Image 1 (spheres, rainbow, N blue to C red):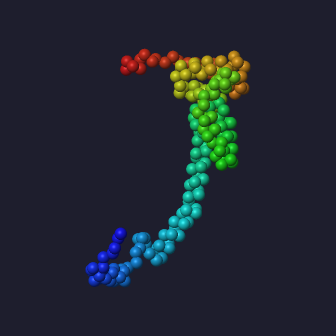
Image 2 (tube, rainbow, N blue to C red):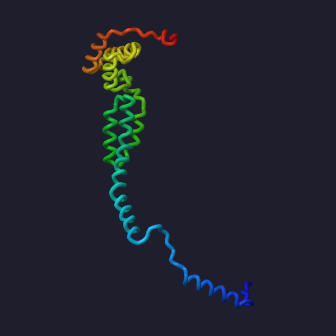
Length: 186
């Protein structure tokens, strides 16, 4: 059993008196490097920042994240990019619940779409490539591939009017064969 030792009572009393003396002389602790009006001004500034700037940044980040699947679908020339865009907008309305579906859809390869329509790309891709072909910005192999894809779609009977016009314009474009062998010799 523990018994306190009072053999040296004067030493304990002296220690207690020293602690009381230090407590009376000590200054109050301060955790902030600011005090008074400066502390109030800093707190007001931080509060305004949190109330005004943080919600704006949060809304912008929320918007950017929810538009990502649409941007991905556009970059990959996904044939259903308009539907993905609509799903992204619906996801904004439903608090982001539909966003993962839009993200997955943007990264899928539309195999059934290719079976039905003969392509895995949106019509905008063909218009962009047609403009590049007319300007002479793409090589002959790419133009031939573009013509081949449009011919396959026309054979299936699913070529929209805009792409029919593009197909006819590409048929009139004369293609110069590239000299791939000379590129390595130079």
